Length: 314
Image (cartoon, rainbow, N blue to C red; front, side, top):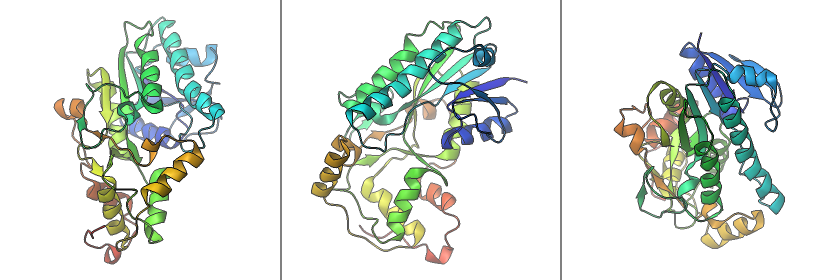
């Protein structure tokens, strides 16, 4: 049975990938620092910082290695946190590259997570995988993260860098928080509401990872739905899905104050990225949830239909 190794696979996205790859008939091995059980996978301990014969053996001969490692961004960006966020991405990526390079039977494919933060605030301009990295903190973080994949000495391994947008899922932290705001009649736009939100349904993200393993695609691939929406459109659709009317927005000044308090760059709340999955669409990948309305009505299916309202103005 072909083996898929997922580093950092014990989290929310990792569990979605375990389910998808298991359904496809793969043996799934999760490299985890916590060593807690992951349904559908065999768990092997690793510290994401140093080589070990036990997890090196799992990578040797694997069909694919998937790297999801990276500390969460939704925290206060103190200097220490910024250093941890950076090292939690670059360190494990470098280590995995070294493990593949040292294998006697290198993995056929390496799929490494990245993020649409690569592009920075693009306003209303549509960007694709060919667009350059921005010069802000997130853009340079993603550039350096992907660079660790590019410089690894793994010539026999096809390398893919998935630039992931906002993941919407039943257990995703982002959707939980936004849904709570909408249900509490506080689901208005942030600032002008014109900033774009590149999003993707959790099932399409898992399917896209699997597609990267079975196709011959390589290089950067945007893991976003083909229909990005503005923040105002997103919140309007979300209010409709949970049956809430229009709500007051968060003024730009207050959003800026939140960014200052958290040490974030303003792009986190007031910037947006109109990223489209040009590579995936151009190579024939079919999204099951191409529109936000379809995604939200699937994920919020527990909301009684009678509560769901036609889309209302912001």
